[in-house]
Image (cartoon, rainbow, N blue to C red; front, side, top):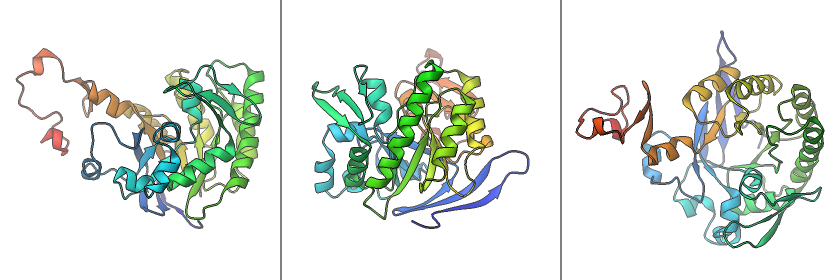
Length: 310
């Protein structure tokens, strides 16, 4: 899809920017946060609730949808939008992060990632081509190329080996594309080494991706490294394509990522925390389960106009 991203304005005192991302199911005004609908739903929320909150785009989890109910089932039912009851844009991840985090027995080879299902122990092989096949069957608006999420404490040697493989997987994923109505983003890796991040960017930016994501952060490296490596990598990416920082959901981290020039973000933290009684407000975190709030009639946040605060 040509001309899918327009850079509208840049901040004079930082790298923050406003953009407009056009997808097959609508426009996303960036920067934008994507609530995570792991198994085809954002937990404890209906699609109309998300619309009322101003949500523009959702994230679907390829790993979970592939295992249950299966991408073939969702395709037969009319695609992920119909399955979810959501008519706006959807981004699907490649499934790589879940494989590496949920399946410690996962075996990585040049062919792909072989893993055991956390549901029934069955064996599966996820290749770059399979990741594209699944996401095209789901019918998401934005698909992600398969990558390997590198542990934050990986050695330089392993980071180099893994990043080289992610680059080759990206090339294979692009060759496997069949749909012309689906955008595809590449994922930059490189661990915590700036020279490896730069090398990965130099190799992947010339590829015909519609946008780029930065992966391998928010996985235990700590706040300072998250921000420094994220900001460094954002500076390597082209201005005319959307930039997606994966797995970042704390308000303070999103603010810093916007300042660095990122456009898209996703994380389970906001909804997971809320389900467990911890809320993000303009005054900081609030634990609604504390006894002092049992009979408190005040809104959660007096500066917010959402349903829970009115």
